[in-house]
Image (cartoon, rainbow, N blue to C red; front, side, top):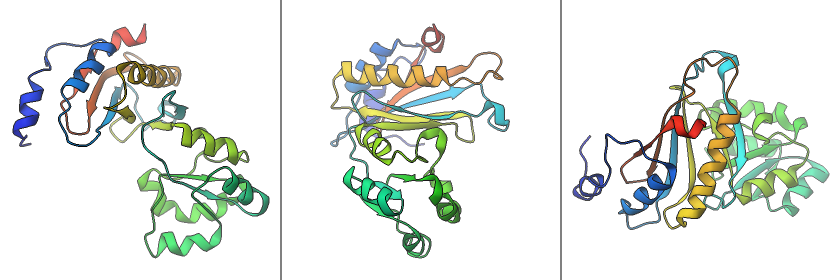
Length: 231
């Protein structure tokens, strides 16, 4: 992959042979950030899980103390009083069956998170082929299938992030913006790492955190010491 001059220049700040502590890594990625926009800080965790086995799956959500720095658009599938409650709680879009053709036929996807009340899952299930591949399907484990739509919306707007294994058993999660202070990024990072470690499936043998990397949208990755994080 061909890299730009600025990337190569900033990559020199990172010692590829070293495993950094979290505080060092956060300071480094901020220093090595060079884009003209406020880059997202991303955490990539390669696990020792084998996601092909149901008992080694990881999926959950956690509210980052300082949010992600991104305003999130929430779509809620609900009817009647629950639909009114969702609007009152600040949902960006609320609806039921009438939204199906808009999403299925018109390709409307102007939202970041989908919440649904349990009685609406029969309707939402019809959108599985569209929402599933984009990671937008509501799920009880991540708190997006719930009767408490107010709490779900408040948590999401406050900076709730979902973590799950991808096909290569890696978890990718945003933990803030480069403009955040090092302290805020450190607190968000620790909250997320703690949640992932807590979610470790008992069926996983050997090293759980194989590699942990912090990076920005455009900047170089900085590898952390996974053993230290487990202690």
